[in-house]
Image (tube, rainbow, N blue to C red; front, side, top):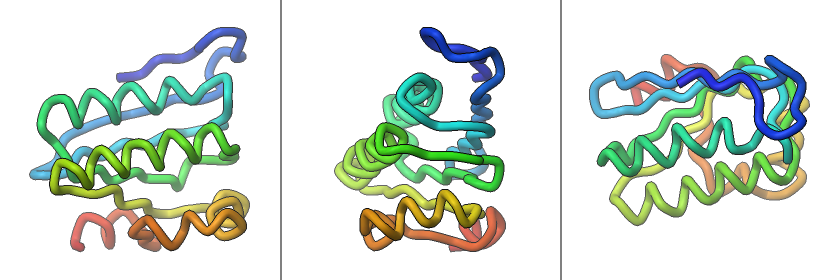
Length: 122
């Protein structure tokens, strides 16, 4: 899925790529994850869970920014994935995004990996 805009968001402000690899759904948001773009990430996460894939790997290496709305999308997906017997793995967080997770304490509730390869190997 590659949706480019939501509401008044500038074109290409956030792009989300999703693919299935084995038992994992890999979702890669690229750009800015905020109030205006959160549905671009929420949709593929929801779709994967609806199709029975409860191991979600979010490759954050292309994420430049994440606000509280984006964090809430990930927290909501985590709850649903865990209820289905899976979980959400985050990989490759840049320092600015990692700081949001650290400040809010969300880094303690997610499985965080340095790289996509490490997340897939876990």
